[in-house]
Each structure stands twice: as structure tokens, then as C-alpha cells.
Image (cartoon, rainbow, N blue to C red; front, side, top):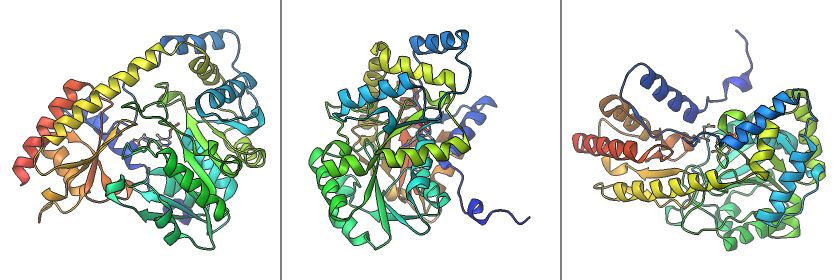
Length: 392
Ligand code: PMP
Ligand code: GLU
């Protein structure tokens, strides 16, 4: 069949694929430990669920404005002011069906054919595919391991061409868990200004941050950055609401208007009931969510300690999100030559699911999520240890 060439060039999400595979193995009775999870294992707090139920009973079951109900956009503006020192008006906010849709809208709104968007490797799996869908060209930068694979001016300069339109920052980062410092962001904001670039700042893991680190939004660092950054955020990770599908973007009015116009033809508003739930997530009590962050921090410390105890294994020290990137190159041999083969064998032999680093464009690593219980983390790392003993 003569179907779309563009669609055929899009790879399915490897993170979703492996997570689904581990889930279905578990359901069929196989004792799998999955480090694949890209979502909190905590349920959405009850006050948020109650707000959704009340919204349904109150008849909030109709279309809303494409950009989202006014109360929610007001609450998002308040959040930006309080948490990020950013002043937005409601017409600078677009609520979407997940941060994923916010990103898709953003690329569709800013890219012309062949426009280039730079990102550091490893990158979150969906960025390159969404850029390609919008007829743009993803450009990958191999930055330094010593610096946690973060973008920096020197590397950006090398990648800059007349077609460069934007670069992506994702802090806290998926998959590395690293965080950009204020100085690093300031330097990147200056680079954007000198070269007239748009910044896409994916801040979805903002609230999952540990060791007294602080999240800074690059949009707050200069008037240019404010005007030229599209901030992407959402409720999936911060409020344990992955299945509800809600995220949002903030930017200048002109960009948000284009993004809203695109969304008005694809999905219209995100689910009305979900929007009332998100309103409660922003305005209601936060104690459940604070407990969740504490639990993640505790698990991170636990998992990092266990991983550091494994022979010939190196990790990127995480400071946020809920992932650890583990360097497995010392275990490559004639049978296991890359992260994909390593992950397949590990699942087959020890029933442990992990995401191969190549899914994020970085060979030699696997990504382990700690959005699972400490008992499962302990058992899973023990199995990995067995596996390493067998293949060495
Ligand atoms: N950005 C990053 C870095 C992510 O890890 C995710 C997780 N799926 C998203 C965006 C999209 O999140 P969602 O669509 O669930 O809001
Ligand atoms: N962002 C999560 C992950 O990286 C969820 C999966 C996805 O949306 O692709 O695992």
C-alpha cells in the first residue's frame, strides 16, 4: 500500500513498547521486574479524583475552550509566578492532552521544512520523531559524560547552521536525571539571544528533584529568554496523573495562538473532567505529592547505592526525575555487542526489563526507572548482578 512516507519514518515509542511488553509478560504469569516504568507507581491523590467526580456530577462534561478552562489557565499562571518567577497572562497558556501534545503543537507552530532543532544526546525518545512529523530536522549533539551530557555553548556553536531554529533543554532530564544550574542556563539563554533561537524548555520533571537542588526555568533568566522560550510542563509526573492526559505550554502570545489553532483541529480541548482534576492538583493540598517525592528520593539513594556496588558498572549520578543511566560497556562481548542485545538477554535470562540507551540515542547504557518499590529494586538489581556474572 502506498502510505505516508513521513509516517513510515517515525519509530514507535520504545519506552512505551518495553513497558507494555513487561506488563503483558507479568499478566501472563511471568515473574518480571520492570525497570521500564516512565510513570509514578503512586495513584492520583484522592482530593484530585474527588474533584473530577464532582465536575462530572456538576455537568462539566461539555467541550471547553480549546486552550483550556479559564480557572485552570489562571491557576497555571499563578503557579508560574510562585514557582518560576514568570509572569504570564492567560492568553499565553495552552492546556493540551499531555506534555507530548504540547511539544507536538510547539514544533508544528515554529518549524518550516528543513528547520533544525538541536538537542543533547541522550534525549527523550519522542523529540526527534515529533520534530520529523513537523517537517523539521533533529540535530544531535554528543556532549561530555563528565558534565552529565548537558548542552553547552561550545557544542552548540559547532552544530549551528543557517537552518538552526531552536534547541531543547530538558531539566530535570529524562533519561539522565541531571539538572542544569542557573549559570549553565544563563549561558544558554545568552547563546539563544546571540543567535536568534527559540528555546524549548521541557520542565515536566520540575517537582521531582532531590538533594536540595533547585529547579530554574530558563525563561525567567532574561527578557529575550522570556519572549523566545516555549515552556512545556504537565501533571503526569508531578501529580501522578499520567493516564488523565494533561499538560500545558507557556510562551509569547503569537506562538500560543498558532499552537491553539493547530490543536483546535486535532483534539480540541483536553478532557473537561481532567481539567477540573488538574485545577485541584494546583490549588488543593500537596501533602500526598510531597510524600511521593520523598519516596522517590529514598528509592534513588537506595538504587544508586546498590548500583555502585556492582563490579565494572558506572552510572550518571541522578538529581531529579526517576531514572538512572547505567554504563554497561565493560560487559559488551562477542555475543552482547550493544544495549539492545544486553536488554533482550537480560529480559530473557533474568526476567528484568530495562530500556536500552540506544532508544535515547546513547549506546553503552541502559535506563533503569525507580518508580517501583524498594523490594522490587533490590530483587531486580540482584538479578542484574547474576546476569553480569554469567556474561562476564
Ligand atoms: N517530556 C518528557 C521528558 C517525558 O519524559 C514525558 C513522559 N512521557 C513527556 C514529556 C510527556 O509527558 P505527558 O505527555 O504524559 O504529559
Ligand atoms: N516519558 C516516559 C518515559 O520516558 C513515558 C513513556 C513515553 O511517554 O514515551 O518512559
